[in-house]
Length: 386
Image (cartoon, rainbow, N blue to C red):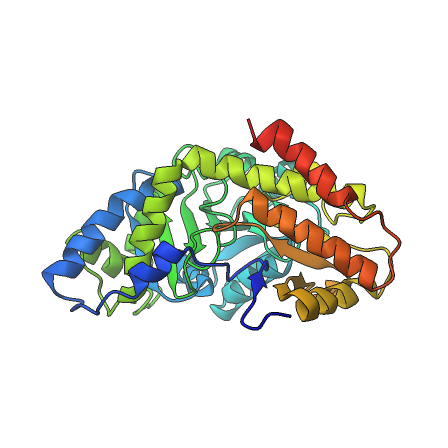
């Protein structure tokens, strides 16, 4: 294998566009100087359309998980009853964050690989109207499921006074988000996935309804206090030292999304999803999720042979430098998760499918080389190449 070759196709972190890399290499500036104020002033309006909101989007230096914790600590206090909808490992993480802050956590467990049925949420809330918040994962990174957050939010608001708090870490920027229209109260994402940046920033937007709760919530908080970020952002500043190099990159990443057009960004992700899923079907490799529950940013495959998943991952990494992810928790060793988000295009999917075919052949699977590639090409010609 050619040295220094790496094809990163995991569900995050994702590849970085060259122009974003160059932007992050700019000389350092003072974080309290006029240059940083001007930078944040340019970034603020660019973030709002990605979230589908007129509200300001707070920028916090921290991982996506810090954004989830921010949502919890700002809207709830010890003893509050909340519902966490768990469709995989990251729904489970949301529940664990809530438990760490001594909330009374009700879990609505959904089989891994399946999306939430909003009727289940409705029925649960009708029996438990006292809940303060409902936590839901938009795209469940561990399974490749895209949950119907618009319908879930509607069910919550029609049947309770609970806030709707959404983890959008592995899809915002790659799928359409309409925070205001869908009446989402808190929406969180991270920098290292569809936003095309390294890890290190989390983004949090809150509705007017959520701000009313945040303002009166007695829960102590310091670094993750959204009120501080809101007040500082009004003056194009941050309460604490920001990751300035990432902010340089963020401006360029948002500019790239603007240049392509957000709808075209979303369409590209849908096309890549359809290409990869069609290829896997042509190769008779089982998909973990049904088509209607599939995420445009992550695809999980579940080979029938018990040892194929790990053998295939090892083979394509060793021979081609292709890095794809395994399963988590009880799906470890049983599935492969493939990221196709952010700085990824249909031509990358064609390369990916071709390498997977070669890898399958190398480990002894009987397949017709080119069959998956052809299926992906046909999707592109009829959908993505219009």
